[in-house]
Image (cartoon, rainbow, N blue to C red):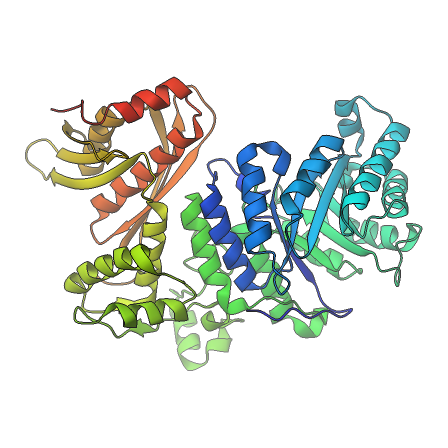
Length: 536
């Protein structure tokens, strides 16, 4: 457990992966998946977890409540719930977070001309709404955060008035969002410094925490966030892998490692255990079905890779020649698990616990079975292999609508690629279907579609190897969209056979799509009912 300590030079890490990050297209999470990510965020050492938008849906409320009660312990992070400046939202947010040892209500109101026009209110009415919302939130919860949405396009005089009204009514944190990624670092720094110095009751020494929440539409989210830290901001709102609406949010790992790497410049610190960064990044990537671009700073596959001869020579002589960070700083190690096919469950459980995974009971048995199968095929099972196995097991749960039983493919330069797939539904009914496609994956997906009968479009397909070597596990992430809908759903699969991992990823995405009911409740029921009927 990370020990969180605070002083004037501590930067509070407010993680909104489970709220703003989940608003990324295709990033829908189940309550169980949100809880697992929240537990990992706690191990990472974030100070505040924005667990969701409780008023958005009953499922979101339940997820926030569960995170509040199970992760929001006395020695854990604060748990925040987002709410519009609306009474019903605020009361629902309180229902979501009140079980936490350190709850927070985060309320917001748009303050730019376009947002006020959207709300059909004038500036004075906006100030009155802010006062009412913060007053209500404060009557329920001691820790209240207020955000003037689209602050980057709000005139500074009105920003001061909005922030002053929030502080006057009890807000303890003022978060200034660049909601549309519009501002430039220099102007943003000046704006934040002005707000800190000129907002009545919120200046240095007042006890009010100033925060920033930046979007990445112009690729400047991290730069704008770091600019705020140089002017007195002490809370940053971030997401793992920088996910979020449109081009995403400020990346947690980029801000944390900038502070860590440039200590002499910022003279600041965080409570983050940076060795947990890579594991957290992979978990979010896998659960949300959103691959990380190879050249992504800190956590991308190429972040510590060197191809240029000059670079390779320099790194071999002295890593600091071309690396300002060590892979171990973010938990990226090349350590190998010295376990083989004769190793037992206890040894596997111990190693998984060392990697930060608490796996027991039936879940341990499932991972152990997969480990044994992999150990039979690979000479060496690495930590990365184990993490992929755990993620794959988590992505395919007993309560899923469909489960892959078997798959067989025939392909090559002669003949037509053919796949035969056996799926089972929740009742255990099985169906076997064959299909022909342009390749083994296409044929497999066509066979699955005959069984599931949930029309969709495959938007994205990504595959990469977990480790080096011909016997490496292959990880696949896919994103699909229901026919006639603009919603997207992601899926993840891992296996030493890339066709199998491709099928697992597709089935996982279909399960999420069906669970959401986004292509109609009756269609979802028909999709589930087809198992045991379809055959060819």
